[in-house]
Length: 157
Image (cartoon, rainbow, N blue to C red; front, side, top):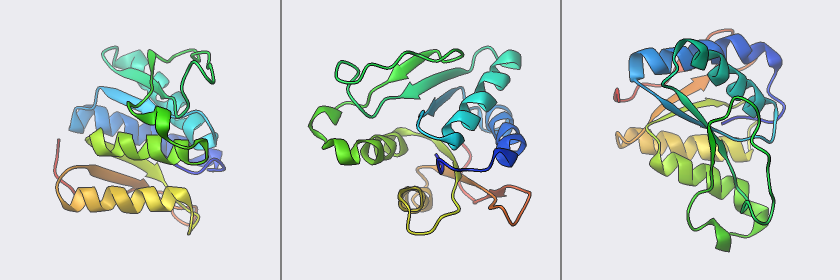
């Protein structure tokens, strides 16, 4: 999860975090959106990791019903995921609600957050609350001022 205008320079950090999540946290399934640069970089990182970890799968998060807004599955993705109950969600908040649903059902989050007062910031704050309860591990990629990743403490999954 991250900003649509995330800098391309975070690509190597993101690839390293995907690899770390696979090797040390046992992550085998990644869910990525498709509405901005961060989503694109995240998908590239997982697709690259799938070359050496064939058991890893990559799902495309669909915030809008596929019958209403069909999306062709991009190369490298193994399937799409449309969260249950999204049919009644107003379109204006569909992306936020779909991301929140994923946070409620995920074990880990890799995020890039730079802009204050953004939807990404609100979702990361929500994820941090879930982390404090031992429900989620959050890795916040460093801002542009730093070249390393900041891993927030949480339980290993």
